[in-house]
Amino acid sequence: MRLIRGTADAPPGGCVLTIGSFDGLHVGHRALIERALALGRQFGLPAAVLSFEPLPREYFRPQDPPPRLTNFRERWRALAGSELAALRLLRFDEALRNHSGPDFMTLLRRLGARHVVVGHDFRFAHDGEASAEWCAQQGPKYGFAVDIVAPVRVAGERVSSGLVREALAGSDFRRAAQLLGRPYTMCGRVQHGAQLGRTLGFPTANLRLRRLRSPLGGIFAVRAHGAGLEAWPAVASLGTRPTVNGVEPLLEVHLFDFNRDLYGCELAVEFIAWLRDERRFDTLDALAVQMNADAAKARLCLNAPAATAHT
Image (cartoon, rainbow, N blue to C red; front, side, top):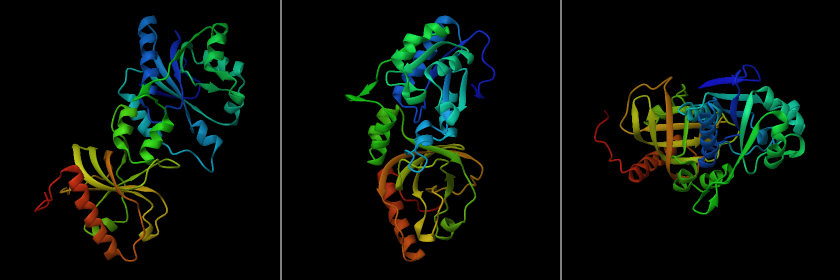
C-alpha cells in the first residue's frame, strides 16, 4: 500500500475512494473499506482510503481535542495489511475546511474518483454542505457514483469512534474489542528514557504516544507484541509520571521476566485490564512499593506466575 500525501499521482484509470477520519479503524470503518475493495474488484479499479491530518475534529478544537484512538503510525500499520492500493492523506487546514460542496466534488474528481464510498453520517465541506445524500445526488455530474454504507451495529449499538472512546474511558476493553474487531493496542518504537524504572527494579520499554490526548490513562495489565514477542505479559503506566514531575505523557511497559534490549524496536501494547489511576507518591520508595503491588495484581489478571529468577 502506498502513502500519497496531497493531490498528486491520481491513478490514470481512476479509483475507488472511501473517505473519513478512520480514527480507531473500528468495524464500521472496516465495512467502508470492504465495500470499496468489493467495488474495486467489480470494476477493475484500485481502492484507496482518503483521510486527513490533523483529524478535522482536532483542527476545530485545538484547545480541547477529542482523545485520539490511533495516531498516524498506528492507522498506517492497521491499513497496511489490507488489499488497499493507497492511503491518500490530505492536510486539513483552513483552505480545505472552506471548500464548498462543489469544490469538494471537484477535488474528488481530480483525485481520480470513479466510485466514492462514504458512511451514512458523512459530512464535509463548509458548514457540512456535502452530506452523504447530497454527494450521492451530485456525484454523476462530476463523473463518479457515490455508495452510502449503512450503520454497523454491535450488540444493538451503532458503532462509532465516540463509542470506542466511551468504552476505553470506562476501561471496558472487552466492549472496545467488539467495536474495533480486535483488542485495543497502542504501538510505537521503544525510546531511551531516564532509567528511573531500572533504578527501582522495574526496567521499562518507553513509547511516546504521538497524539494530543490519550483515550485512557493509569496503570494497566497488558500484553506486548512485536520484536519477537507474542502476547508477553507486562504491567504498564500511561501518564505523565507525577512523582518525578513529568510533563510528556508516556506509555511505560515493564515486561515480566524479561531482560533483552528493545531500544529501537516497535512494540504493540494490548490493554487487558485497568488496575488503578496514576497518582503522585511522596517518595521513590513509596512508588517502588506500589509498583510491586501493581505488578502482582497484573500477574493475577494475566495468569502470569511470579518468576523465581529472571531469564
